[in-house]
Amino acid sequence: MKLLQRSLVARIIASLLAISSMVVISIVVTIVIAGSSRGDAAAINMAGSLRMHTYQIVAALQRYQQQPSAENRQQVQALAERFDSRLTSIELTNAIPDDASHDLQEQHQLIIQRWEQELSPRLEAAIASEPASNIALNQTLDNLVADIDTLVTLLEQNTEAKIGLLSVLQLLFLGLTIAMVAIALFDIRHNLTRPLYQLVVLAREAAHHNFQYRTHLKGSDELALLGRTFDDMSEQLAASYATLEEKVSRKKQELERSNQAMQLMHDASRTLYGGGNDLCSSAAPMLRQLGTLLELGPIRLSLNDPVDHRQMPVLETHLRTRPMYCRDQECHACLIDPQPLEIMASDQVQCLLLPISVGDAMLGTLEIWYPQKQLADSTRQLLIVLADQLATAVYLQRRIEEQQQVTLINERTTIARELHDSLAQSLSYLKMQVARLERMQQKEAPREAQSAVFDELRTGLNSAYRQLRELLTTFRLKLEAPGLHSALRQTTGEFAERMAVPVELFYEVPPYLLNPNEEIHVLQIVREALANTHKHARAHWAAVTVRFAHARLWVSVEDDGIGLMDGSSPPMHYGLVIMRDRAETLGGELHISNRQAGGVKIEFEFTPTTARLIQQQPDVQDAFASQPGTGTSS
Image (cartoon, rainbow, N blue to C red; front, side):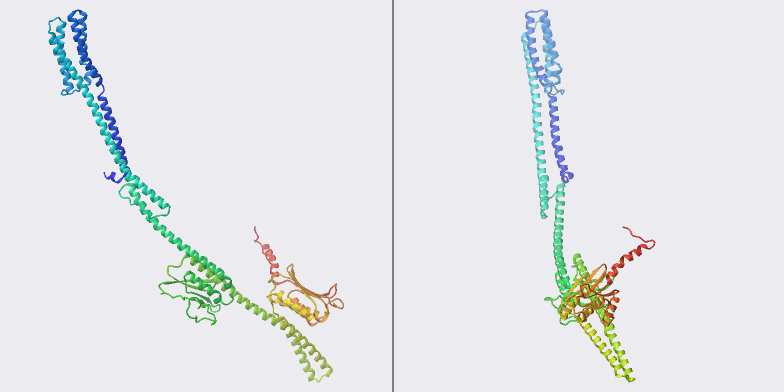
């Protein structure tokens, strides 16, 4: 019974077995009753034929009495024998129960006794021509027929009883089968159909992301257990789905904040990389907006001192007062905040310390304070990118400062060399002439000899003044853009205005090819050549050509003036000496000659330092490849 209560399958199997059993029992009972009724019709026919034989015996006996003959007698004897054989025939005895107290058995025995004891002796006596009473014989025959009728009636009643019993049993088994089917259908409806429908509804609702539906199945069978399991699973799915939706919403918000932060960092990158030395104006707005967007802060940027390597805070967001280390009292980048952040207790915030480094160079640190359990992985990655961006900006700033210092040192070195090569040498020459004049005055040399020295002093002073003016003009050039091209454009414009003739410029040189030292030498050579054209050429046109080809820089200054007297280089005077010295300093040669169309052409060429390094690179590779044990592979 417990199994039937716990298992719907067991109840369905039991119902099927019960219905099948009823059907099988009904069939078996029908077969048994039908088998027991077999021969009843033959027995009834046989009993009915006994009655007819009785009348045949009476008729034959009457014929024999009227006409005693052997034939009639034999006919009577044959009918009597046939009646006796039929009375005890198998067809009749099989239909009669063996029970001695049964009505059929008693009636059959009564007929046999009446035949054997009453009718058969009288027939034998009548056949033997013994006198017999016809009235008594007829009475005996009537009694026998009445007994036979009673036997036939009992046989019919017995057969009808079997048929009635079969009908009752069929109705009984039919009722039991209908009851079993009804019980099975009720059980299937309430314990199978409805739970299945509720499970299907639960599955359909779950497919539409509705996890609030419950089956509420009760019981201990399989579907009830399955329903409770589905209810628990739906509840867990609802919780998991809600958690996932919350995570997706949180991730979506994080992605939106990350996108906004990336856009903010991208927009601020130009200002950050182009902010020069002022990190406050370039980085502070970005850090403040980033902290507000990501709900972080304060954010402090500290840089390492390159001399003593100590930490020096340079920037901090969300401040109410100006930092003590502030270098610019006119700057308000750290103070511009409508709602300054309230610093929470130390147990409620955490600090993320990120290195500001490029390669192995540690430039500083970035401190980021944030509430506990609020820093997501995406935010951490963004802050790492921010640290790298700040490191790049600081590194570029320091490189720019170093480059500016190197440029300033190179410029000072160039000025010192220019003063040494021109004005210092002229002053040394004048100093020697003054010493010579002093010795001549001490020796009271003639005035004519001293006049020659005075002439040389005057010439030297004029030359020194001219050189000083050229140097001042060169160093006072206001370049519209850095580089040699801008300086040459201003120089040609200056001399075109001084000579009142057109001075053309042809410039074909890649950018950033020459270093500052090379640019100064080229510019000074061009200026000295144009100064000579202005003083001596009486030209109506001049041109300056600077071009780069085959890893060499070629410079040409030409005019259409009077040219050289003998077509060769002029005698060595001070300006030409300086030009040749500059050309030799650059590793080139200076050539002066007349143009075929008239005028003078000054040209020189040299290999720039950058081009020289590029040109030497294949040689280094060839030398490396030629060493034993080395080689290249493709």
